[in-house]
Amino acid sequence: MTREAAQALDLDAYLARIGWSGERRGTAAVLRSVHRAHALGIPFENLDPVLGTVPSLALSDLEAKLVHGGRGGYCYEHNTLFAAALRALGFEVTLLAARVQLGAAPGDIRPRTHMLMLVRVEGEPDPYLADVGFGAGGSLLEPIALAAGTELHDAPRRHRLVRPSHDGPLELWQLQARAGDGEWQAQYAFTVEPFEAPDFEVINWHIATNPRSPFAHRLYVQRTTEGTHLSLTGRTLVVTAADGTREERELADSAETARVLADTFGIRLPEGARLPE
Image (tube, rainbow, N blue to C red; front, side):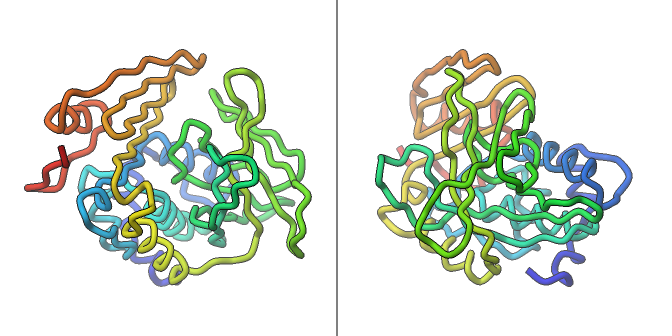
């Protein structure tokens, strides 16, 4: 994404959407605050692929959908929009791609399909890893400094960065989240090789259309509040409290699913759209 594209963002509307107000400066405090507001303010969802549409990553379309349209999106949408907002606020942003490790079997090597970013803050010794599009219960609520052994208490969550050994020429970083049992759980691994917007256009198309992609045929919706994490996978609704307590129930049909999307997740279905039975 070019700096000119970032300047086209309606920053006032975006900040209103995430409920953030403050001094618009490229500081670490602003980065943390805006990151958290976005993570809490816009849900994660893959309705478009489930309904047979590849989400557009054009900034104007993202603004129409996520800012004005009462919708969420998945990682490419969230982080493309967030990168534009950060650049408009004066931050230097580099897009990265990660291999998701959460839920992977031992030895399973997944492709780099997750979008995240490095953010540089003037005067800070280390760049920050920022990511508002992971969606899972172990996702970052605030950015974390890219330094080995860094631990972040982004309440109610905890994260850390480690550097696993590997055979590649670039340093490998792994983001871990602390699970309810106190164990550290890998979320994803990445290097700091820069990726560009056209790279994510290709990845986005693959994730939205490949019949082997889980996002192409099954509903995944996530929303984080200050006290809970809400997850809808297919028709399974899970509410997880900050202390790890879980409540789970099955929704009856597509009509109830649509009601839960609106009432619980704050997501409006596209006009005329019907969820598959």
